[in-house]
Image 1 (spheres, rainbow, N blue to C red):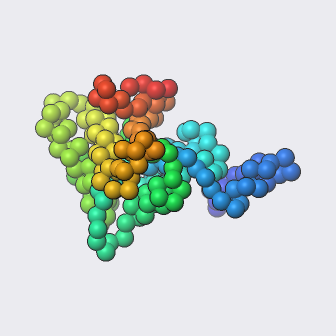
Image 2: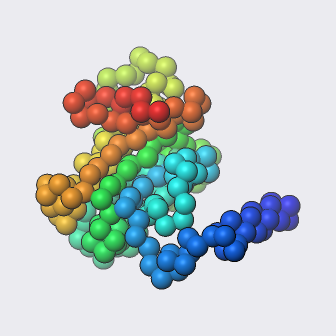
Length: 210
Ligand SMILES: [Zn+2]
């Protein structure tokens, strides 16, 4: 229960910070949210988007899933959690930026590369990460002689680009990008060095941002 006690203590701090006498943040936030940015990040416990970017409640609309993936637009009767969140962020909240936040040491991408899900009998993971199957294929074709960590890094970064491409398959999203009211960003955080990179279309590479 120690782990849960720590969370409750953490909430007390949150309460003091945002609901204490000196804070008025939730005076407005309790009625509505107006985040300008949607972040699609990995479920990995080490890459919390709000913690990494120092954002307060209300600033980021966040979707987290295994390997920070965006599926392509599909019209069927399946349950589309990521697409629903995208639709809400873009069409209702009218966010101005979407960041795909990839990271080093991603277990989901490792599962994609190795065709396993780290000892689990994967019912869902392997199918889910197949969204980025093209990244794995590119790495296997062109980097087979490179060490595993470089293959993983390349696969993690190419996966970010695939998710950026998939974003544009949603018509209401690509319309806004073309109109210049919505901007897409590919970010990659290296959790072994603490460096943040962003994808530059002009160079076709992830360049150091911070
Ligand atoms: Zn991950």
